[in-house]
Image 1 (cartoon, rainbow, N blue to C red):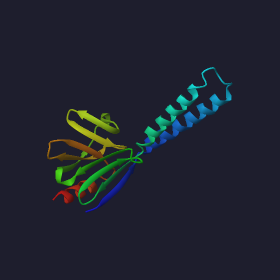
Image 2: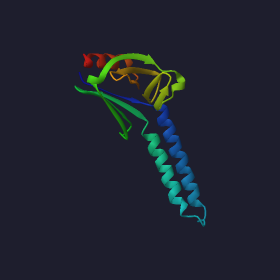
Image 3: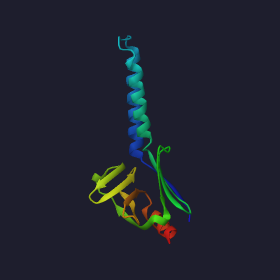
Image 4: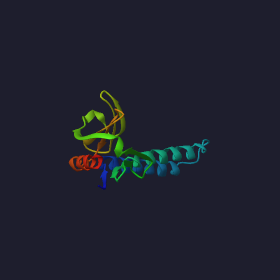
Amino acid sequence: MNYKHTQIGYLMLVVTLAVLVLFTWAYITARAEPPSYYSGTNFAVTAIMALIIFILASFVSLQVIIDEKYLRIKFGYGIYQKKFSLNDVMSAKTVRNHWYYGWGIRVWFWPKMWIYNVSGFDAVEIKLKNGKTYRIGTDEPKKLEQTILHSIK
């Protein structure tokens, strides 16, 4: 059974756009100032700003894809991707993350698990045959759970 769904993290999108506006304003304001002795640092500051925007933009969405062999997740434009063999998945269940688990890519030590999410608190927890646990955030947890369960039979 094939499945493909992208969840948008609207809060992260707003934060990314706000930071972009702030950086653009700072850049334009700095260009209006007379050149300083340390004009070589302008490139470094611009590169750091671009890197921050690049990192923020990579967590704006989370795409989950299930095909015949794999469950794949991809953040944003694909700088971070992970795939799980469906043969290795032992179970899947709908769960609700605590608010303090946060968003993004997280490792949680009690209980030990990896969490991948961009928005909300709903997730599907998968347990692998090797004992590892992962939570994949989604805005349609029941559909994702049923697709995983159907795919691992």
